[in-house]
Length: 172
Image (cartoon, rainbow, N blue to C red):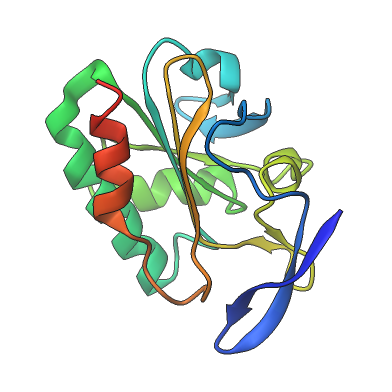
């Protein structure tokens, strides 16, 4: 399933692979990779038990994606270890690790869908034409049910930070 014209990039309509996730749905499983002293995996099951913020970006090496990651990193710091926070992109885990180190991002883990794009397809965030992620936010409750979702209509625009953080707070 694809969604034509679901998002735009600088005004050009693009197609998203997969279905749109909506509040009330169970979050699909995924397998992402990150680098922390070696390659490691993170799956949906690893996040259950705490409310979770999933911040999806096209690439950490672009201004809006960097800003989004840094803003969420700063904001989720107030929750300590009561929440999970993950930035998802198709950047290689090594590049994500470098970015987080350089930008002092410690409260949100960066994880990559580079191996098989299973996250992008099952969460409906993979842009078919560009083979990168769109900008999207998902908040999951501690059981892994979607309580908030936002697919930012224009890839170069920022998400609604307050709506996502309020949804996350509502799960504490």
